[in-house]
Image (cartoon, rainbow, N blue to C red):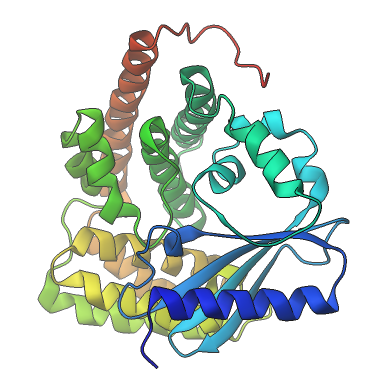
Length: 343
């Protein structure tokens, strides 16, 4: 099947119509994600991000549903109570951004969405609310770095996952200054443009340097992919498989990495490191998989003494992010010592 934006939108509308006919407790469904940006395909695969708002607490928070080998639905289920205080969503970098970044409403009752969106959108881009969304992320990243200093230990999957989350939070603290937070597959594809627009293009290469002392050589990366994919297969069979690594999403990740590896090894490596590490968190007894992961991370300087070098680089990078945020706030007449209120 030829995948276009129109075919994906049609699939989304059909899925929503079928679900809402069966479930009358759905207040609203809106579409967000890469399909809004008309950039749905990466490596020939795509997901369709739909947010279902229910008039009660949903039984599950997320579903992955296969449509074709190349396309799946990614359904988030929200309790309507999340939206009861729409002014507070101005400070929510995720839900708030979903609501104001050109969402497509596919199902709605009594103009509920329009009312909530209008309230969130009002003042959403005012500097105090932008900073209110950015600051908690850099503070969280800094706290992770402090935790590492207070509790030195070998970089096992848990600690590498924390480290990767710190990188993500730091980067999104900057990205939020001029747009919504960045998502997983296009994280390092879109970050350079964001920081260049802010006037700090060097922050892009600085972030890539945090992924390792050296990037894998393209000629060696096939072995990386094979061992990574083995872990994805294993976790896909596990009862503890996280929803993000549902086997339906296997091609969504692997084909994206194949498409990126030749020209953007950093962007490909980001996907591999995140998903491989997350998989191993759920596979504590798979010794061979852990050994392969450790060997590969050693090659790029993310294990042993080299990991302390990464932490030192992270410290410097966080300093830079903090300084940029402070300068942005000062330029916009803000005092960062004053709390931001959702008014």
